[in-house]
Amino acid sequence: MSDLFHDEPTQTGTLPKTAPLADKLRPAQLSEVIGQEHLTGPEGAIGRMVAAGKLSSMILWGPPGTGKTSIARLLADAVNMHYKPISAVFSGVADLKKAFAEAETMARTGKQTLLFVDEIHRFNRAQQDGFLPFVESGLVTLVGATTENPSFELNAALLSRSQVMVLHRLDDAALAILLARAEDIMERPLPVTADAKSALISSADGDGRFLLNQAETLFSITIENPLDPSAMAALLQRRMPVYDKDREGHYNLISALHKSLRGSDPQAALYWMARMLVAGEEPLYVLRRLVRFASEDIGLADPQALVQCLAAKDAYEFLGSPEGEVAIVQACLYLATAPKSNAAYKAQKSAWKLARDTGSLMPPANILNAPTKLMKDIGYGAGYAYDHDSADGFSGANYWPDQVPPTQLYQPVERGFERKIIERLQYWDRLRARKADPDAT
Image 1 (cartoon, rainbow, N blue to C red):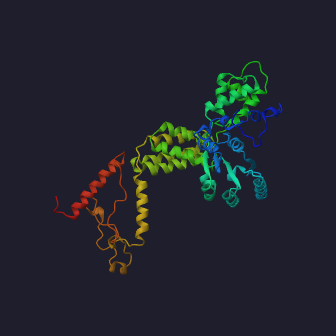
Image 2: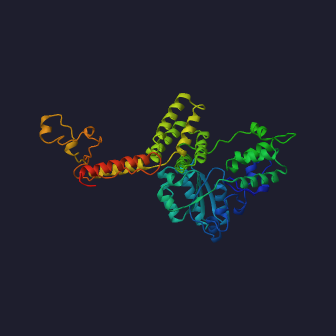
Image 3: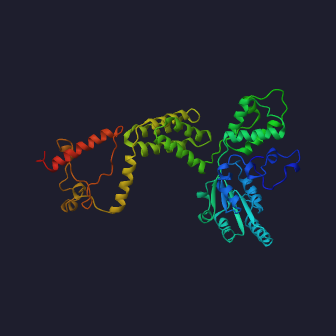
């Protein structure tokens, strides 16, 4: 009937009237799962497995409230497997041993076991390794559920034996269907206006379970007139955006901010930065990333970019939140609208590589200081040309080790202030060539 979320199947008709709304709306088959048709439909990976009657181990990766547990339970029903759910939050090694022993018992009766592990990323690496022999032998078909990026949280060995199925957050259309089914089973409409219903869907942030919990609260009240958005907001708790500052959501949003800045889209950059700050990110972390961006992606194309970011950091530390946040906005917009160049960033990488490759080569003797007579006698400083004594303030001397030819590490671009830098470099190149060969035209 809908895409929800409990482990053990129970016939809807046997549920007591006091059962939670989420229980009443549990789907009875995969075709009733909402919002994941790219997996459960006839052409989806899961749909094809079910049609073939054979499942492979898989990891269901998606946001909260998108139906991971329901899909696992329905998979077991669809291919007539024994369903054994455990949670990594509440289970340990002893529970896993019991689950595998139960699977062996079922195997002797000719029944295969689907072992569903909720929050599988909470098992440590050694515990995850414990699944491998049972998965490889076919004793269990493992279906793990996680809200975290499996690439970071799961062993490579476990991932290599599983297919990763990515579940989507429920969009507004899917959530609207969920609410409609809730109204059908409750046999009355939600006591809210159309605008309030839209606000309710938006507040769920793609989480079907949260939406139904909020709807259940609304169904429990008795009022004369439907609630408008403000009245509903006063009654219901506000859902905070899903954002773990040490998890993948953190890196996804900072990546989106960085790439929007690089793409010179101030509107998108401001949106992603707002997403981070509204969700509780530390403003100083955002500022650190902006400072980095100023050097990595703008550099000398606009030398003021770094100045703006450091000024924003000082302003924020002086004013605090919320007053100081407008300084962060100013820095963000400055970076997004500035000319872009990664020439300084590339020059750093090239210079670091050349330094590692060339080891401990001495500088040429002409640019070495000679503070002692011995050093002077062996040639330190001999032939040094003091640039300010030259007519052009430029000697054209060699500053590279004898074993390393002059190398162009910094290559400015034809954008912003670096266009002027190119003119300066070309001017010095011409002077250098003229000093090297005065007779040349």
